[in-house]
Image (cartoon, rainbow, N blue to C red):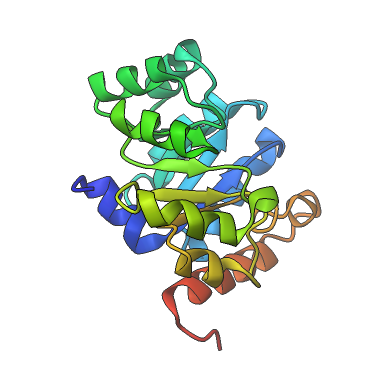
Length: 214
């Protein structure tokens, strides 16, 4: 838990996920999220132009944002993500080869896990945190229950987290949450309403930091 990136994740508690938005909207989306106070930004590899976005975002926002790659399913994709400049790798699945590659290249890997067995396996293999997925289906009580015996494993809850339940998810013991469509609203992006996206991001950040939005 000691790495500088992990400390930052614990402090920020939000990973915004860009998935399936057009590449031409990518830069404005990243800017809008940055303006709203988001620090961790994940671009999923099943988004068109993802590798280019990761490189550009590192260049444009690397001084204040932490840019990672999501939906990294195997070693080949992990290599592409690291070459593009991803600072961390997030997966929906657990692949020990990806974890080993991340460790060898100084890149954090946070694999997707659902069962206690997968969580322990991932942690033993060297993952510094695990993504608990799909949180929307598993629910907050599931998180509380697995945290009881596995409280030493940092968990990122992803799926189904919104403004209404984000506090309860964090209170249940998640060190951070992954936020896709509930934060990176595709409709707002499509309509070019980036000021509204910034406002939405600010609401999430305020909710997490315990500040009251004005």
